Structures are given as C-alpha cells and as structure tokens.
Amino acid sequence: MVEDTSSHSSECPVARTLEAIGDRWSLMIIRDAFDGIRRFSEFQKSLGVAKNILASRLKTLVEVGVFDVQPASDGSAYKEYALTDKGREIFPVVVSLRQWGERFLFKREETRSVLLDNERGQTLMPIEVRSSSGQKLGPADCHRVRVVADES
Image 1 (cartoon, rainbow, N blue to C red):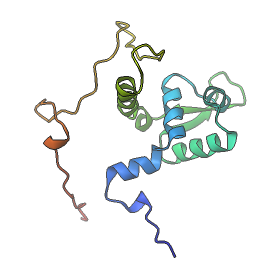
Image 2: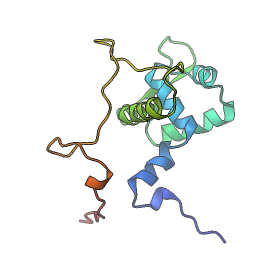
Image 3: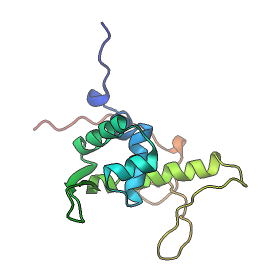
C-alpha cells in the first residue's frame, strides 16, 4: 500500500501552499479574479477550462479561504466568487510569476501582456526578497530552520 504523503501534514510552507493553490488552473483563476472576473461563466470563457475542472478548483479555493461565494452584485440569481483578504494576499505571488515569465519566457519581439500601475501607467518594479533591514537577498543569503509550535 502506498503511504499518503499529503502536504497537509508537511512542515514545509511551500508544499502546503502548492497543495492549496499551486496547480495551473487555480493560479489562472486567481489571476483572472485580480482582473475583475467574478462569475463561473466568465472564468470558463476567459480560461477555456472544462467546467468540471473549473468547478473543482473553485470549490478548493473557497474551502481554503481564497474566495467567498456571494450573491451576484447585479441582483441576479447568479453567484460570484469574491477574493478574500487571504486571496488578495496572493497578488505578490502572481506578480512574481508574471515578472519571471516576462524575463525568461518571451523573446524581445513577442507580443505579451504587461501589468501597469493605475496611478502612473508604468510597469512595476521587479519584486525582490529583502531582509528585515532592507538588504536584497538571494538564495545563498537565507536558510531554513524548523520552528516547533507552542503547545500551551
């Protein structure tokens, strides 16, 4: 029998995050939500994903608290998926993925979308990892430690 290695019991925050939101469709749904999409049919049209996959991913994203299901803002019988505070906190992750893709996955002459700030209409500064004192950090400048939860 295969042992269950589910990341629900993992001590690694990256593993747990990937379990919750790490598949392609979940991240694309979240990206679309940042662009203002809120209804199932709008997500389906934008992404071209099969309805069963979309329903499954939205269900999981609601269960983990990324979205709340609310009555439609126009008063119709439809439901809408609204990002929660927890869901909006994913924005830097999506921007970081976008910036990495812009830098490494497109040729200079290729058409692509860019993210602009609303106030100035300019591209965003690259996201960087910084120490508590503001120093830019790379992988060699950090290490992991195990923190035991306080059981009191």
